[in-house]
Length: 591
Image (cartoon, rainbow, N blue to C red; front, side, top):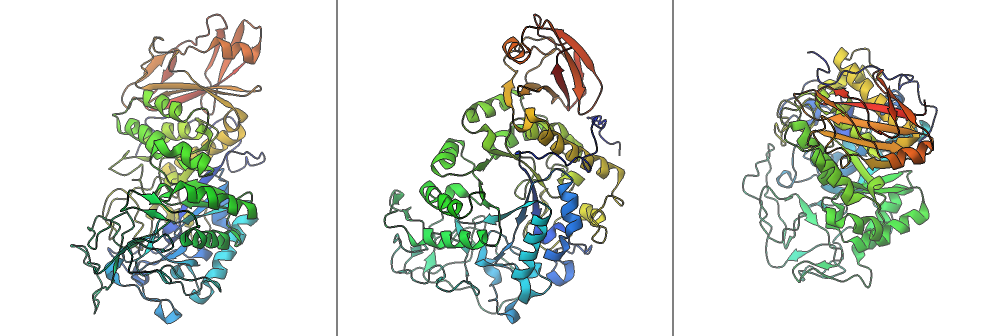
């Protein structure tokens, strides 16, 4: 394969990212690990394979070599996905863990978002199941020893239909233990009930395991995605139960928050429990399905215990962004509906670069710096998949933009930096361009990197090494240039609608700057055509930055050696050549 046909990468004129880790930055870089799959070296990959057949990653497999290699990318936070114990078809009853009914489990391994015990970790992640919590605590310790922060999932909206905590602390009751099941709604109930109705398994649910008795639930409870029916569909979150935060959904969503609902208190206990184990942050699943009033109460409660703990909300309604940031007290929000969707359209060849302007305009002023940017995560299709960009280099320009558009955090999904390309069905999830979250599996592209626990690049392909180097250089560049990590942002679209060669539907440009540094970013998102364009710069910004000068110089940084001079009166560059789906970055200084 010809590598980087659309973006010619010339190593930036600074030290390799693996060596360039001396300066700290407030710009967060998150590396999301799907813990079950991350370090699994089993290559069997049998469709619907069991734990014994396909294997799994263990806590111990995420060793210091792995963490060092991750840190070298410029990562500050590791998000360990799928830590808290969830429902699974794997039987751990010999360890005192209640067996789950396969009719209410998705996939052989199970969904990490159908929590079975908020106070426990997944037993299959432990070398010694009986020591599973201490093995997780050792992982937290290893992570902290390398000056990395730990993030885990907090799943507040729904739990497994067979939730059962077998190691809950003294004084803690299970969800639903004290509920009045005769009522559809009670503010102090943990669940919503459908009195006198039995739960019905959705049509089409056919677990691969034989089971003697049909799953029984009476009275039926509401399903996790707000389905108040005793018979949800197979497309619903049928394996989960909706938790009750004092909102009466069947009565106009009337709220009952005084006195504080029992579910609020339960969740505070859970967050406290994990915070005390050294967890530095929580990625909060489907946060907008939980009332913002709860977040506005519980987040300050947890920050009173640890002011440095961070909360990241998975949220998809832009109209609620400000509400969950300021009333709900979240630190950061997912930027899926905004920047991710805009960039994905461009990567696929049917987007408009002006959509990026629309994104930051909606976020500007109050919270552009609080949006978590990403191009991959466990919910989204892999960049290199046939369903998305088809090859990893298709998103390199978009990755640079995501990392540098504002001062907020950037996230990389494990293996994104190695070009992971799912191309077969693993089990429950099917062949859909995603890496499964429901099955036991080994990710082929990672296994050479793992290299018997060494986590080095010796066995990576030439293409993988170059992709990984690009990601590392990009993250370090974003952190170590203060104009990006701490600076201001200035969109240049409006100034350039009539600039020579500037097609604003395909070209996007902006400035990032502090009093000490000014950087110009120019992108060509046309997948097929080179563009030669001039860029008009805002005279007011240049004068404020450099004072009474007549001439400035531009020097290409990160890659390339192009140089230009511009007069302050003209405030316009000469023609800049951009290959298809590529970018250039210039530093602007006095001559």
